[in-house]
Each structure stands twice: as C-alpha cells, then as structure tokens.
Length: 171
Image (cartoon, rainbow, N blue to C red; front, side, top):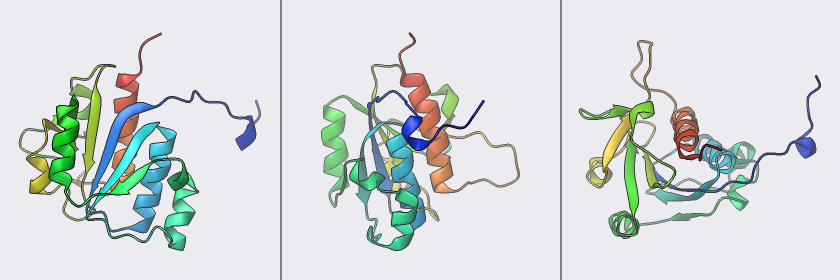
C-alpha cells in the first residue's frame, strides 16, 4: 500500500442539487473550509446571506485552496425571495440546527430525487429565526459529549457526508 499523490487520485465527478445557504458566518477560515467541503461533496452552489467576509484575506485563501473558483457562489440580500423561488422549483429547505422539532440527520426523509437548500447558521447564533421560518424541517447531528454545539465547518462536513450518501443512487 502506498499513498497516492494529488494527481493520482480519481473520484467520480458528481454534482448534487444542493444549495448551501450560509446565514451570517463571520470567520474567513470557516468560510474557506466550507468552500472546500462544497467542492469535495459536489454541491451546486454556496449562497452567502449577511456574510461580510473578505474572500481575498489570506486566511480564507489558505483554507479554501482555490475551491472558491470551482464552486459557484453569490451574496444575496433578499434571501426570503431567493428561498421562495427555489422552493417553487421543487427544493426542500432544511436547517442544520437543534430545534424543538429537529430530527437526527440520519433520520431525515431523503431520496435521490430531492433538491435541497441546506441552511447553515452563524458560529455564535446558529440559524436565524428569519431563515428558520422558511424551512420544511430542521436536522441536527447527534452528539454524545457534554457540549451542545460543534464548529460550523465540521458540522457542515458531517451533514454533507450524510446527505450526499443518502442522495447517491444505489448501483
């Protein structure tokens, strides 16, 4: 067994109908990590809402590793209209947030036919009430420690792994 170089690795080039909506993120490192995750998991687009992060900062660039050039993204001010438009096109909206009705991420009802908007909340406040009201449901990552939260980029990676695994057609 030997480790492969970057140029020797071959993974399927799969695109999933998932739009990541980032709600008021503040950390360049977290945003860069989420771009990398979005690239790794074949996400269609990243939408930034009230994210005032300098994508030219060295911290962002170090963590994104140029994936901001391969993953489409935009900043949107009228997020309510944007989400409503996608929902009218058949998208289901999911908040990654612990709520009084959230379900564990491995229990959300998904199939390979789903088109999704996954809303990721800010590092300090989570998903805002404004965006929660647009969600069809909320999901959370089951945790076993004493803390009730984890880093937003790590949580996004876990969520995207579970969701894309569920959306991948069984061959």
